[in-house]
Structures are given as structure tokens and as C-alpha cells.
Picture 1 (cartoon, helix red, strand yellow):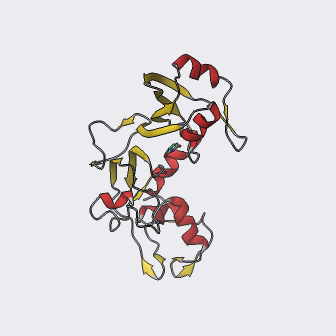
Picture 2 (spheres, helix red, strand yellow):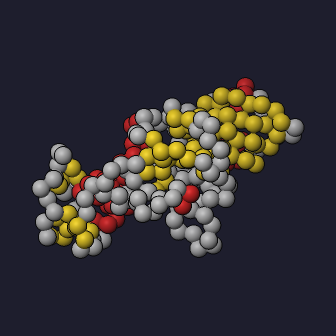
Picture 3 (cartoon, helix red, strand yellow):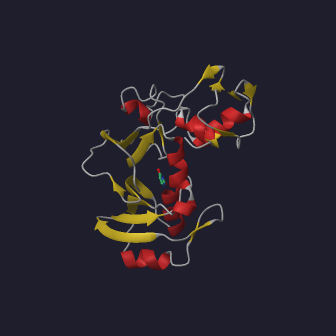
Amino acid sequence: MEPIRLQRYLARCGLGSRRACERIIAEGRASVNGSIVSEPGTRVGEADIIMVDGRSVTPEKLRYFVINKPPGTISVDQDIRGRRYVVDLIPGGREMGLFPVGRLDIDTSGLMLITNDGDLGNRIAHPRYGISKEYVALVNGGWSKKALIGASKDGVRLDDGSVVRDIHFLKAVPMGESTIVTLRIHEGRKHVVKRIFLALGSRVLKLHRSAIGGLRLGELNEGEWIEVVDVIL
Ligand code: URA
């Protein structure tokens, strides 16, 4: 193994996302060859002895799961009201050090990646990789694809003043008083799809993520998952 940054090494040991591992380092919980290291950039290699909270850690086999997150489950492990954490749908998920890549709202269903590979989150979220996400949204009101494209051609200004560009509306299918809209975005901001439609004057009634990059949910029903060898987006 080439020397790598300590936070990356810790992420490979199943200690959470790279950001979570940076926190571990900043909190002075990690040591290299017996000395506490609080500089995240420190490079470490195979010959080094790495410890966290006084216990030695070693890289684990990287595991990748694709799940269809059911509505009602949460993607952060900090709930005080006893709602189900999506990782718990995979038996032994916590013991394997798994965590979801990115977030979906509690009422959103669809494709999530669950892994112990702390680097994957970075790869997916970083604009450099330009990975898009596809959503299917049931929104109130009648919309045509043309009208959506027209309304967003200069970007959509959200409630905080920021502008989302590069929204690709792929389909708009009428359903009674509502419309089923399929769109692709490159954004990871909180509630972004709901906020885009609010800015356009509609409300999202139901939301589903159907793809991340080229990866699709396929035949998985809500709550079902499969393990894959690697993730190519
Ligand atoms: N946008 C939202 O509004 N919610 C999600 O869960 C994901 C994207």
C-alpha cells in the first residue's frame, strides 16, 4: 500500500466517512507509532502502527450495498424518536462499519449506496467527478417538460438565494391534478429537489431517487438490497 493520508487510512478501517475520520483526528483520538497526531494530512503506510482511542486499527475489506431506501427510514444515525436507520436494514450493518453515502429525506425512497468505504462519499459528492442523481418527483400542478425547461433555463434561485443550474428535466407525465417529473441534477444540497419545485411554485408530494450516475435501482423493491463487488458510477 502506498502511503496515504491518515484520514483516508482510517476511513478504510471502517471508522466512517473521510469527514468523520478527520474529526477523529482533530479530537486527538488517533496515534501513529505511539504519538497522537492531530494533523489530518499526515501520511501513513503499511509499516506504521495506527491506533484510535488506544486500539489498533487495520484496513477492512471494502463492502458495497445498493438499497432501495423505504420512506420512513432515516439516513443519519442520530434519531431520538426511534425511527429506523437505513443501515439497520442490512443485517450486521453496524458491525461491518457501514454508513450511507449522502442523505435522503425521511419521506424519500430510492437508491442509496451503503458502504464502509469512506472514500466513496467523496468521489460521489465532489463536483470534479460530475456525478448526477436522477429523481422521480410527484409534484402538484400541471407541468409540461417544455414549461419546466423554460422556467429553469437561467437556473432556479432557491430560498437561500443560491442558484441551481444544470437541471435536466427528462420527463413530465400528467397524473390528475399533479405531474410525475423525472429530473437529473448534479447537486447534493439539503432538500434540493423540494426546494427547486418550491421555487417554481409547486410542492413535491412524493420523491424517489432512481439513479446515481449510471447506477440504477433495477428490480429492487423498497427495503430490498444487494451487495455488489464495487461501484462504478
Ligand atoms: N432532494 C430532496 O428534496 N430530498 C431528498 O431526499 C433528496 C433530494
